[in-house]
Length: 444
Image (tube, one colour):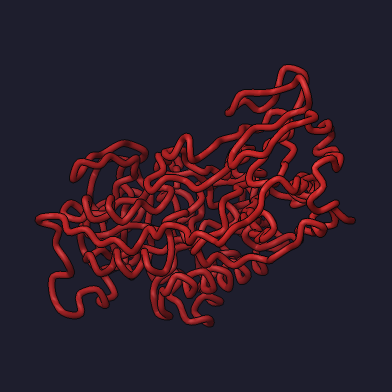
């Protein structure tokens, strides 16, 4: 993550159902005689808007995907992923994404924080937990607050899965999805399985596998690592393997900023079989004096620390990451001059550590070297993470000798340093936007 050293009822199948107001804006009826298309923008008559525009010349528009019509609030972006397969599905922008992303989305190295966003894609072979709803249940859909500020719905009548995220209050997302309607213009045929992103194994000349029997089960490793916002494709991971030993994955959390279309249990298994070691990271609620809107408070810090640990363990298990593996909590930089905020962070970390141990995983912490890492290192009377991943973008690929933290903290083999921020690198003919890490620490 980014740091500096300063650190009702719907009329199912009736196309003429009126679209309800969303976020204070209203959308009109579809133009008479419109026909359905697999992926098409639809707008009130005389108010057509080109793909990618958030609104037409006279107001908000409606988009249609596989017979599902969704009113798009003014100011939102709309992206058709089949037309733009490199588009990154970002949760920090108000946007509607339609279709499946390509195998290698062009994402920034890291995005932290969320606002309202919706992704509608064909139902397929992914195993994301979701709730099945009928079209006539949309108008009374309820989205309760969740620990990860995210929901996933299966809508079999349209053959789609809807993923929605929200910033701080699910009510805005709920109003938008309640206004969606089925048109009856699309008929689901036999389901076509989603193309697997993990069933093709390509050998890259010179790509090393695990160096010795049992190497991938060792609790720590030394080597070069990288992290990027969304898990790369397996082809990219194989191309990059000769250059790196460690990669990071963002497994969940209320402030995780990118979708993870590639990240599955099979992806984790195959990447480890390539010889990579992994740092699973959970991007949960942030410090009360941090810059992101998703925050815990002084009052609920302890409770939220425990809830984050339970959710992180659940998500790790879903990816096949076994008990005993490390999970890093991502605590972004915050204002170290505010005592009450610092105390809340320490309560949160204390409860994250204790609860994650209780549920069987190894609690670790990522933060800036001059805020979260130094505050936790100096603290007394709290449970401390087993290992740290600290951000200090000084360009020095060394885990010790940092002027902000003593060398005797978290040693031996319990440190990772993120020494360079957002930049592009090319390996094996493939370019990614990454952060760079040097590792002498706990990994899976």
